[in-house]
Amino acid sequence: MDEWRRMGAAALGRGIAAGDIDPVALAQSFLDAAEAHPDAARIYARLTPERAMTEAEAARERARIGRRRGPLDGVPASWKDLFDSVGVATEAGTRLMAGRVPDRDAEVLARASAAGMVCLGKTHMTEIAFSGLGINPRTATPPNIFDPEAAPGGSSSGAAASVAHGLAPLAIGSDTGGSVRVPSVWNGLVGLKPTHGALPLAGAVPLCARFDTIGPLARSVEDANLALAALGGPSADLRGAGLEGRRLLVIDTVVMEGLEPAVSRSFDAALSRLDSAGAVITRRAHPALEEAYDLSGTLYTAEAWAWWRERIEADRDALSPPILDRVSAGQGVSAADWIAGWDRLHALRRDFRAATAGFDAVICPGVAIMPPKVAPLLEDAEAFRLTNLKTLRNTRLANLMGLCSAALPFGDPGCGLLLNGGAGRDAALWRLAAAVEAALA
Image (cartoon, helix red, strand yellow):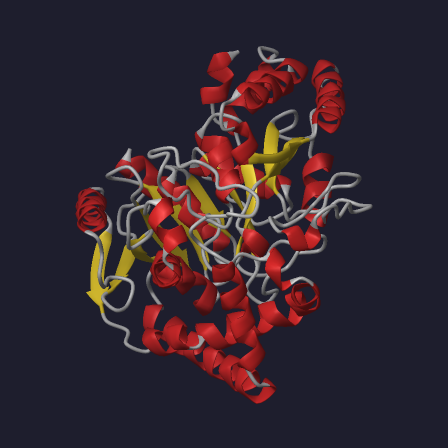
């Protein structure tokens, strides 16, 4: 059964279909592993064994009579602790929501259950999902798979840790500025961010609903693609995906600045591999991106403050200072500035679409820096702030420009790359990601 913990979700599903894997034994093996793992309490906020076993037993019966609901029927998954789960606390990584127990599942969790997926439990996350570092001094900071003293990436930190540490074959997280893709890169996983609106946000605790998206963290593009299909999101037929003649654009602006040596080295090696596989790589500047990044503070903080302010004002000490400072900045944003900011961002998105037309994807390093040590960041608020901003810089490109995006690991541990595709072109991007994954293998 230990081998099951090293297998991907798709392989486990095939094993169930072939009659080689019992869904009940599979779910129990992951629950047992989570109970026994020395860092389990830092990864899972709470397990849901009763639900998991009930769902696994139903999956076992469907497999027995040949009525499986899909390729992931009977496959377990973890869920970030901002997805409502009926009768089980959903606290969004913050004491502001301590003891909150919803009376229904989030829409995506309900869809996953209908597709036969098994819910193992809820994973730890950054407070209110408002940091890319994955550090949470109020609840727990999950361990980075490559360095126990380093930040795991966030805000879907426990989601990444659950897969990387073999405590779930698949995890579902959310991505507002990089919260699926940063922890994927820093933990050697694949993370997919669909186009905004591709999956319903009902029952997911919001941060910034106009940027919030939902996506999987997995061991492969195949696994993540199947997860999106189970959630009712955009998925692709990955068969026959290739790189010959595919056009990739490297934007030599913002996302290529100030890269740490290991990141730069790994990205250059990836480009060389992709070039050899037949991809056509073009480099071009797009200075207007800098203006889009300048709008982030206005648009993100204002919306986050609008949703969270009543809870924060009732108990300001519940949030750790870096997160409180960040979300409180939204108090100073006027309605006029917020509206003007969105008007300008829509114009910048149109310019970006025109500038990238004809390319299959915009490619850049996944995260500009390697996972930083946690302890120094907890001791220096300004270092925390600046490091967080640089951590989210490259992933935020897709959120600001309204793109779909795939994160793939490559190179030194903790390094990876991003493929960013046009809005609504999710299936095409997942096929490209599968081809890139194969070329980099």
